[in-house]
Length: 556
Image (cartoon, rainbow, N blue to C red; front, side, top):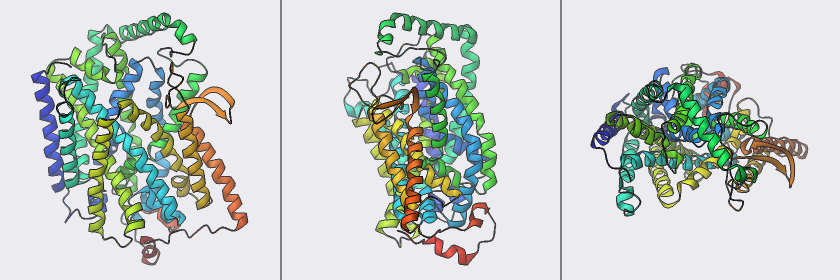
């Protein structure tokens, strides 16, 4: 355990207490008559403008774990880690096209979750339940990984008593942090992370810009940093040549190797871009905006975060050049800041990372709670639930989600959370046919979509389970890419992202079964939306005779 630096700790605590106070005061920000509805508590009144949405969506997507894990991959010599940069660039043209349609139909029909839309569009509570279940399942390890980010900061700060301390002493700082998060999220709903996101993103920008300017002056410039990192990787590859040749170790390098690794890089980038805005917390941030043009503006403005992410990734190489030595690569960046910066600025950096965990964790817990309330509680347990009952359910569910994520991290190794997060991306992209394609057509049959979803979920999970960690052939969940194999037959030796291949299989099954169900004459249900819904904007007149039946759409 590191010794506690009082200056760094004081600065860290100042910013942490600042955002805690802001979290509680957020209930008075853009004050509504009350927060006893999901529109107000869970979506911030659906009234955020371009400026607020930019911070909220950015704070939602670019999490503390992102700011630790991406440079950690580069520190560990895995050049594929740069895939996070192109995938966030590919992402924005995609969302520019389809998210305004989702916003419009959700605004017109008062949908709160993506599963609400799927249920109304395909007249199927069961399909809506599948989307909701997938969203909750994929979100839980995502929240847990925010805790991993906070743990990394607390470890470098020297809090918690070290490995030899009892579990109460060691984990108490984490308990306190999430107790405060739970309290102000319960009180203020989505307004809390929206307000705190201003502080989080300002600190992140400040820390990274200072780092990419200051560190090269201390480490021989960027040329010196690249040379030092390259020399480190070459030395590792030379020392472990036999193990690499035997497949017992992975080679390190600055550029993905030709062939297999480049396919992994490309498929991870595309698959992750398709998956990101399927996550319920991303949709929640989008639905909180007040008109559809705000989404388009943010799709144009949010790539500024991708530029920041590219700079951040380079800090992993700077840690190598600075001689940072840690057994856990996740600690490389916090350790770099403690080693190379004065204590007060290291405290600012630690606060930025920790607050960067609180904002997405709050949004994720709200999104998961909304899925529970709308698509499980209301759909199956209390169809006549009032707005106040829905809000109460979501508040309680958000507490349980946070507590579950906390227990997840404390009771299980952090590697387990990382493996589940890899699965989360594979799982959540299986909802794309029902959500994204459903925004344009009902051609797919509802039961075919459900079957395709199930096949994609099972195939992707089994493929990930059967992938061993390099050097340990008896292990499981060793990654999310591998050569494409079908029934034991290797189709290609190029490494392909499981989420993408599972999605292709999902679409094939959905297409074939749609044709079968049409021939057999299985009912496709009634569309609970109207073509005009997909172009509606705030202030557009609503046709009451079209709207009323959709608030309680027929279900199967």
